[in-house]
Image (tube, rainbow, N blue to C red; front, top):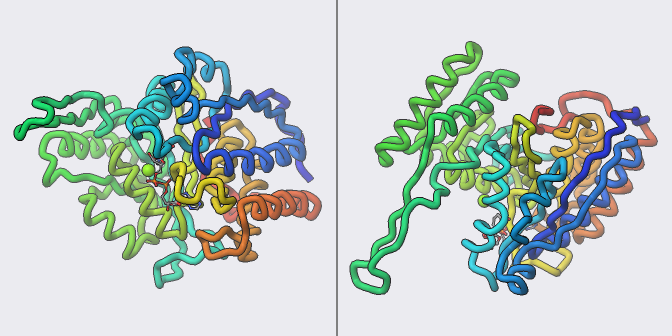
Length: 377
Ligand code: NAI
Ligand code: MG
């Protein structure tokens, strides 16, 4: 049976957003509500209808005081933003990137893990269990740059990459502390052979930072070789630290190698707890399958488990994780993982599994039952 945990109210801001966000977020909330009931956790969800529809009506992705509204919450639970009717620069820079930056969510933690019942496109059956730590506030995603001579033959675009000692070292510190608690093996994604100013700086700061962790060794891998490594021998990788762009690319690749991008969760963390952290699947709004009840809700549900863990409820997080993993193990996944279920059928099966697990046993704390989530902070 579940044990009562701290009876603190957790205020969760929910932004379902666009496309399949409005399908997978209600699926995950249904699971979170059931788990909260069983574990006596007080979750209060407040819904915000921000996103591309809002943009088409108001000319912006969220209200002027949107960040102030979100700041009054303990966490943000996001689906996805992005619509064919709105330029991606508007949807990303009008909502997600300001939240990540203003709330100093400088760690984007993205677990990549094989799950029983989900076939990998790789021939090998070796289990994969990787944590990607993506630097989330600076790097290649910068506003510095511009366009000149628009429409002329010598039209020019310049985009600057910004790396700071503070930004790189705090990402490296976070990754090294995770590695220290696992195998001690850290891989840093780089491209210092071609990008000759920022990437050697990244390498130096990562090396200096990791040197303070006696049990951790860092391997600097050029990202092109690392991409191949992630396909050829992903089971030899443990914790990866990467810049904003490289981490984004590697995590789409990593989730596909374990079966589907629809499975992949993520946590945008403000480790100090000065601001709410944000939990969202790695995938986008998937306009190609939106509205068809085909979306895989696992990435969103798993992100919910990471949120529970972050809010101080590891037992509840493990319960939720065990539930969706058991449904996948039975082969009842959605179409993207070769299964027969619709989004709603899969969600119903997870809800049933939550109750069965609760009735049968308390969740044991075995490593398999423990979600690969962020350390509670
Ligand atoms: P995407 O991740 O939305 O879709 C890529 C492919 O994966 C599509 O074939 C899609 O059907 C499939 N897919 C994604 N999630 C799935 C799920 N849960 N279940 C089953 N299949 C799934 O990436 P795409 O197509 O590049 O971007 C679509 C829109 O989403 C764009 O506007 C983009 O800017 C936005 N986007 C938003 C993100 C966010 O809100 N964090 C992240 C990535 C993209
Ligand atoms: Mg991405």
